[in-house]
Amino acid sequence: MTTDSVRAAAPVARLADEFSKLPGIGPKTAPRLAFYLVRMPEEDALALAEAIVAVKERVVLCSVCYNIAETDLCIVCANPRRDRTRICVVEDALDVIALERTNIYRGLYHVLHGVISPQNGIGPEDLHIRPLLDRLQADDIEEIILAINPNLEGDATSMYIQQLISPFGVRITSLARGLPVGGDLEYADDITLGRAIEGRQEL
Amino acid sequence: MSRFRTYRTEGVVVRQMPLGEADRILTLCSPDKGKVRAVAKGVRRMKSRFGGHLELLNRASVAVSMGRNLDTINEASAINTYGGIRADLRRVSRAMYIAELVDGFSMEGNGNREMYALLLRALTWLENASNLDLLLRWFEIRLLDVTGYTPELVHCVECRAWLKPGDHLFVCESGGAICPNCRAESSGALLPLPMNTMKTLRFIQRELAFDKVEALTVPEGIRKDMERLLRTYIRHIAEREVRSAEFVSLTV
Image (cartoon, rainbow over all chains, first blue to last red; front, side, top):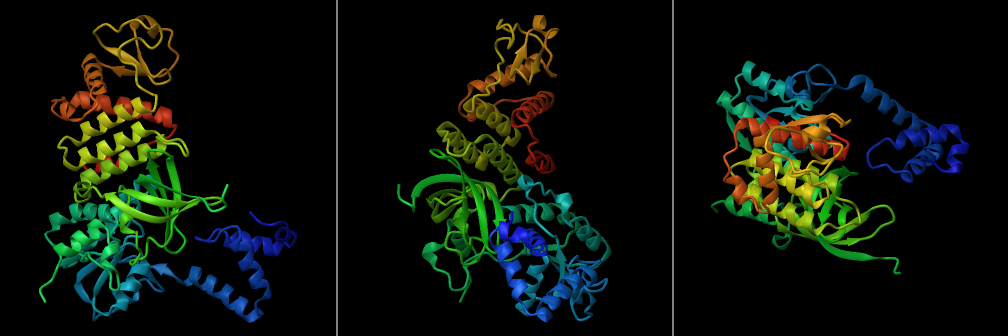
């Protein structure tokens, strides 16, 4: 949906329509961004356009772990110093970046590109679960870390994967559950608080 | 009428969709307001005050402010998180199926207390029940009952004659079984309704609580018949497939 003034200038209307396809961009924000681009210095606008084209032309999915990559292998899979006996299974490529920021995990990843969400029409066959099983069969994997978002759909996905990989006899672990740093106990829900108590540690 | 209107209610989160960076659009089934669709801001952030309280399938009390397009949840506190369901994939998939049915059968601004009470009972049973598929059949029949789609299984849906013992046929368009005399004149699609399947369905239809139904020993054939019939009838009413059914079949 665009306003009359946007419709008057066809290229701006087209740009606004394209912006409105992005997640979180509504009918008000889309024309606002389009008009901002009209006022933007030409070199900045061109840099943005080139960045968008480069993303579509040069970025592919890693043939092993389905992380975003510039070549056939992503930088994690291509790095010979990574621990090849561990695979951390995550929901999307942004989670890889978040886990890499910790500088603690040195193993490999496997990106599912979603979670099982039957009501939204996403079933196990829509995720990259089968290639994970192929990796388990082909490589010498000792541990699978399920690092899928801790909500009902994420947990359902973890349990479903666990069911499929348990016959392989590898160690299956999941990220610890509990309170976030800086959080308040009084605002914690029963499940989080319960798991924090269960997962308490000796000091 | 004040510009900033707020209301308090309670509900079960039956659906969620991500919105923007860290928000979610939630659908709650509430006893007094029916289906409530509202934005829960920031719930996907780790430090969200009420993220854990508004998980899918949680029963929560909420304070909501009304907006022009969508309402916004200002406060939330979980009443029941149904922990017994969450640790078992078979129970989770069936809870998702129940949530999808409730989402499909509830209406915005039109509370159905009986349906809400049924939903709470079903989730509570689902935490411990051993016969999960029979629980789904009981839930489907009870849901059809509280939403005005009770399948007619005692009298012929066409001529109202009492159905004599024997194998019958079920007509989705008419919402019930038909007698042999009316069979020839029926134009709708006919589903087989063998005598023992009809008897079992009648029994489940009479039971408001699940405990007696769970005690039943139902042969595999009758289970399959009931599942097929109820699923086809529900698809006819909802005018779409229940998408969670496939995931239920993957988690046996």
